[in-house]
Image 1 (cartoon, rainbow, N blue to C red):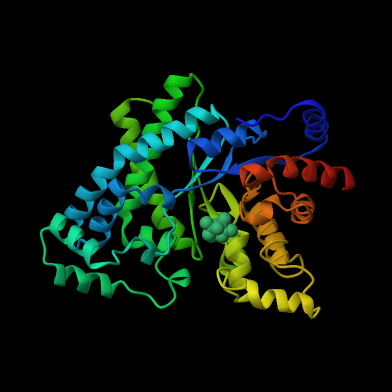
Image 2 (spheres, rainbow, N blue to C red):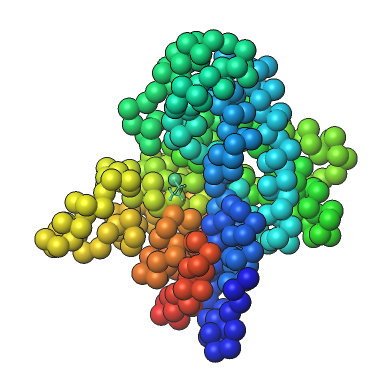
Length: 360
Ligand code: PEP
Ligand code: MG
């Protein structure tokens, strides 16, 4: 593991003494989680679970799940994934040893999971015992012209609540196991992505709560946990006081919030944004440095509305901006509790958070 040492470590210690905001990391693999800790991360602010499903042994089960039209078949496919997810999460909890870990429910654009080649169609069709033609039809029925604005985030959990239930079960079982093996109580934080409506969050939270009750009864233990949401759509920011009724924390997903506020695709923007910058239309790429006047205004408003509705709500940021010093200064101004960024940016974030606190 890279270690911070010598003068660098001393500067980091001074920074830690000066800052108010916590610094967490975005991490989903054990290697990233270890690196995050060695750089001083005080938890995981975003564990993106979609990347966990692309291994050869998992993707077939995921495809079977999405392309089955019977709930029982979907549950059978998910049962194959449960032990793998349980060990994914247990390992992260063990590495983080009682520090907070926020796990986000599945949030892929759906097309990333669909079979693409004839070979993949044949493989999944064989496993599901249906014809390749039938499977091709089902795959085509799920095609979207604009997947980033389509069937992703909590919308998937509403369509396929079994996925959220499987993930919640894996999280709770792993938290109990890791709590017992490390001797440190684990309080998992489950994050629901791409919420725009209170009822979306209510629906998914009810599934999570049911699973929590079932797991606690089966294991005969009590487990504390938090359920919260990403604020990454303008509607979520506008309705933050209402959404806060069902959310114990908000994490600002400023990548999507920038995309949806500007109406600029985060995946295709770079070429013309560079022209804009050269022509002086914008000063900085808003996907790198938070657009304080627009997107920032939504963050400020949602933070205030969230705190008004629920004074103890925990507020963080997990978009790329969480590791950008000028954006971190803004996060301090609006009083966020933590920033979360990629592991390599943790030292910069520690320093920037300290400078922001001192300046304030
Ligand atoms: C975001 O949208 O800012 C975010 C953190 O989620 P993702 O980048 O995974 O969409
Ligand atoms: Mg997002």
